[in-house]
Length: 220
Image 1 (cartoon, helix red, strand yellow):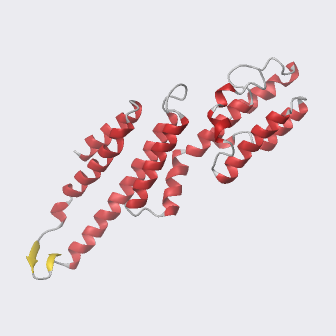
Image 2 (cartoon, helix red, strand yellow; image 1 turned 60 degrees about the vertical axis):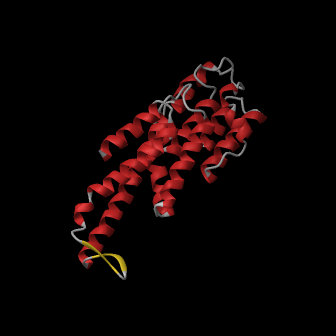
């Protein structure tokens, strides 16, 4: 049952129904807990309250909590990855993605996931890498070869755009490319600085400009 709830939660990502996502995630965790109740072999009620029968029970309970934390980290990483990958064009807006991320990380913190492990979840989801990919894509002019690009620079332009996530063009490489192509305008410099700022801080330097990245037209 816990796996069914988890799958339904992941499905809600694709359906853009993230209001359902975390209730189903929490439900799967609760169901997993009850599935492990048989580990608590015997409980009794007395003047001291509701307590476990033996130290072994406490040990098993702690183990269950650790398993729930590990599961939550995996689910969070999967959720963030799906959100960032789903509907790359015309899917979730940037604001919606950030809200889902915020809700996800808040839940991880509430159940005791350390800040270091939370950061690992974000890294494993490649959340930041996909944002960097968008920076490179839009700084270089989007989907079409820029009309003002010299013909002898087209091969390099394609090479910069089509690298994999672990080898994206750096701000310095983009600056060098535009300088060599005689196209390093003040607007382009600012966009490259926005990209550099995101790499350093994981924050948007100019959120309003980033939100309108689809209309960046300096190379068209």
